[in-house]
Amino acid sequence: MPQLTRHPAWTSLQEQIAPALETPIKSLFSDPDRFDKYSLKVQNILLDISRNPINDGVMNLLLQLVREAGIEQWRERMFEGDIINSTEQRAVLHTALRNRSGTPVLVRGKDVMPVIDHELKRIRVFVNAVRKGRWRGHSGKRITDVVNIGIGGSDLGPRMVTQALKPYADDTLRVHFVSNMDGVEIANVLRELNPERVLFVVASKTFTTSETITNAETARNWLMASSFDRRAVAKHFVAVSSNVEAVKAFGIAPENIFQMWDWVGGRFSLWSAIGLPIALYLGFRQFEELLQGAHDMDLHFRNAPLERNAPIWMALTTLWNSTFLGRSSQAILPYDWPLQKFSAYLQQAEMESNGKSVDRDGNPVPYSTGSIIWGQLGIDGQHAFYQYLHQSNTIVPADFIGSIESSTPVQGHHEKLMANFFAQTEALMAGISADDVRRDLTAKGMAADEIERLIPHKVHRGNRPTNTLLLDRLDPRTLGALIALYEHKIFILGVIWDICSFDQWGVELGKTLAKNILPELQSGEIKPDHDDSTRNLMQYFVEKRRQLHSEG
Ligand SMILES: O=P(O)(O)OC[C@H]1O[C@](O)(CO)[C@@H](O)[C@@H]1O
Image (cartoon, rainbow, N blue to C red):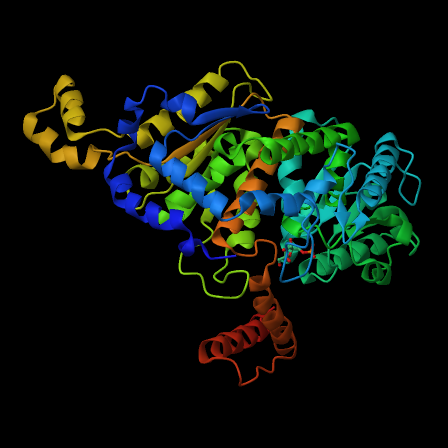
């Protein structure tokens, strides 16, 4: 498979860079059909990409490029369970986890749907038992609180979704999340809980992740300290993992282990038993709705023509803005309070997947790959970093996500929120010229010399690209579709960039070094083979710590 730069469309697109940078986006709207051409409705999501520096010629070339990169073949290979995670020799089948169509999916000739359905059934039975009070704590009390212990993909998905769908939860169970190695987090969570009524879900695909195992051990000690016998673990701990032996060694009974498989990447795993906290919190039916929404998006991605295919559009706008126009970051800006964690979730999904610099064959790629994903709730961001978005010299393409109906309507709020939503994307594209500033200030009666002094500060150059995603409302099905939309975008970009989006070797080196450093911090004997800075800092840490301890 040739690298991106060898495709004919790559060369043609290079010639389009200068004109795209010189052409104001708003001038592209001289085409009266632009909005219709560059917006589409998929499930309950209206996607508008018209405010990007992309004209019809560029769009055609981008579509040619994605075809030349073999997206149609790669897409089928993914859905069909082919081994496309080449460095780990694995299939990539988060789509099978939400396959509601009843069709088989073969991995190395074996249908994986029966094991997926079996595990889903186990989740349903377990969730119903806990929620209805048939599954009780060791002392016979009803479970009231679920604590998910996991990190990265074993945390961010369930954490984001449970928050996003809070309006759909009842009062049956509370959920809490512990991911951080800093003991402050677990201490804060445990302080609020009654050990007789807690269910811990230890979520770790590998069950070797040091943060998770450390937190799980602390939770188990806390449980034991409250005068329970060891058998209590069976009623208060379940695990989700593909490493059954390690979970058993930890002391969790085999019947309390929910399975995941090596063909599910951690950051794509909320559709598996990693979603257990979601199902416990919302009930199994709502979890199924989430799966259904994602499956509907899968069908759209698989079947809609590339010309009007939402994940393809999302990928192409990012590709054009980043690899071609050099805009290396992308802001995710939800105007839906429940989507608070959405940018953090996408940060892992996209940056862990596409932050690569060699192609599938290990050759360096001569172009930038994955964007820097960041963001927060848009309305709060307006009072924090939007100044930068509007007037700095760095252009940050942004996705604006809002809903037509609030999932928790409160009189007088939603229109005001959405007025800001529409205003910001309009301002980012259109800006305000010196003439307009002059006219405004003159109308306000300001003195001419004062006006001229202020003009350069008040001008907004505009021309900043945005995508708008307008949801009917943030319900489980729509959220499922929204997440799947971004997952496919990530996949498509990986195909175009010719990188392996499904491994994450870049997280390993730091983990290995931390393992080596730990005994040195514990013993206080710092080895000479660190670089000077690391050695001196560790030495300072050890000595200062000793001193602080001795001072009490
Ligand atoms: O589920 P596990 O195996 O504990 O891994 C947690 C996270 O750690 C990572 O491997 C990165 O360190 C992620 O890819 C993963 O989501």
